Amino acid sequence: MGFGKSFLLSLVAFIGLNFIVSILYFALDVGFDTLMDNIQNAPLMIIYYLFGSVTSVPSNNMDWAIVQPLFNEDNTFLILSLGYLVAPIIAAILAGKFAESKFQGFAGWLLTVIVSTVAVVIGVF
Image (tube, rainbow, N blue to C red; front, side):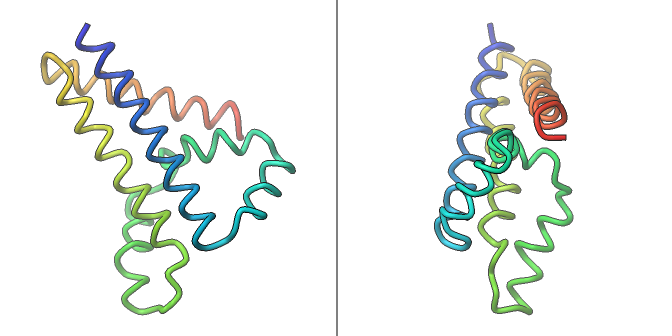
């Protein structure tokens, strides 16, 4: 039971945080018109907005979140990159908290990452 609970809670947290961060990014920076145009042109981009942070490289996100705002006044990717860094961390912490053992927590988070990656690969690419 601990593995299933760990997996489902981490998956829901991961999807929810990615959705919130994507909406914040489009609301504050680009605008909802761009979001609707992207979804209208490619409807499966919704999958990328929900699971997309799995496909990003953490070092690239750290560059966008930490280095670029120091040297550039345009904070375009700050919210998106912080969300891409924070969403997996919070989901992993929840997976570990609600698991009955460390292995179940790790396996629940690993299955979340695998499901997210497969969803992006099949749905978007």
